[in-house]
Image 1 (tube, protein in one colour):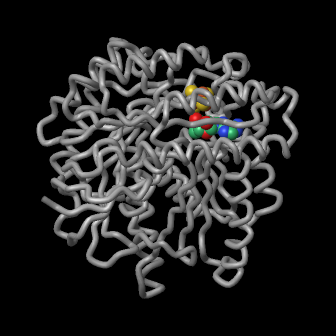
Image 2: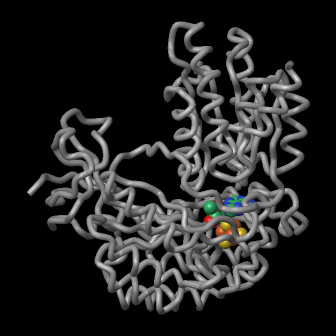
Length: 477
Ligand code: 5AD
Ligand code: SF4
């Protein structure tokens, strides 16, 4: 009888997506509902997200699926399901996950029916999965970056079995559209325009864990944004590891600049942001589109990584110090108000004092609004891992010097709009000051001003009264 049911079930399971996952979501919903009846309370889930905007967006999709299964969101790690969406771009991200997994293990000892899941970039590394199987056998499900859409099926397999379920796809396959999503903010949203990266910067693990570049069809992107706008979204952040190479692999190629112009036409949408741009691919066509599209925000994140042409070559970045400075000049010529932010790595293998001073030189010349600075971290399997490393103490001293420089400049440039009235998107209630709202200018700078809950999600005029270095205090006009 059992056998018959099983084969009947197999016949019922749709092969194609997203129908297949809808089927498993319903199956899970039945199981979750039974469990919750027996417990006399709803089941809770907590998703902990590490890393970049891409992971943040993936977590919204994961939560969307879990809510369809009947889980209620919670921020407690004592939830019935705790899912870590991991990052592996630098080793400290990995270490954090191992540390917290140890703590989760103790919580699970007290509550054996608790489920623990791991997904995201770290899980695409086979050595990591082996370590977890061996040292953290209490983990229930493991999946990677290419199959988050399969969460329902993976959860179903775990709920109907006893063992840890490990489901890692080595390569990305189709892009699965139309999955449920639960947004963190009702008024703004990330929108994936492409997945993966083909650049293979020699320090970076992303191409290995996120696979080759795949662009979504422009119609799918535009339809998603229109749906979001109808649902109250006023700001979108177009997401891709290298948005400037968007559309190259489509059957009918489209440039990122063309996409931007089409997104800009969507009625009801107020702000467009995008991340991340690679300097080697940022075209004049894009600069013009940014300048001409009124909804595109006055902010560009343009990772420099190093100011030394020699190091940039070893990093396989495919631009020189001069190319970068030249690009910044063209961008500023077209958009004098634009705020520029960047990423910089200190201590890349072979970096000398002279190389490092080239980086400081670019920082002083460009005067970034802010810069994320990172100590180079060896990533297994990347070309730079085999190169000669810079001693840790040398790197630490350089890192502190760079940070000081970056912060001093940033404190000077961030306040340039003081005593003007600017459009601000009110985003959250201020956690530090009762009766204050925190919002963002088009150029991404934060401003706090008196206001209430009713303003959240609205764009309002704010007078910037005082610059505090990295943020403003203001009042509504
Ligand atoms: N070590 C340090 N920083 C890194 N990044 C990427 N890989 C590494 C690494 N191995 C930084 C880059 C990138 C940002 C997201 O992370 O600056 O732009
Ligand atoms: Fe990594 Fe370079 Fe791709 Fe960015 S462009 S994700 S740094 S390989």
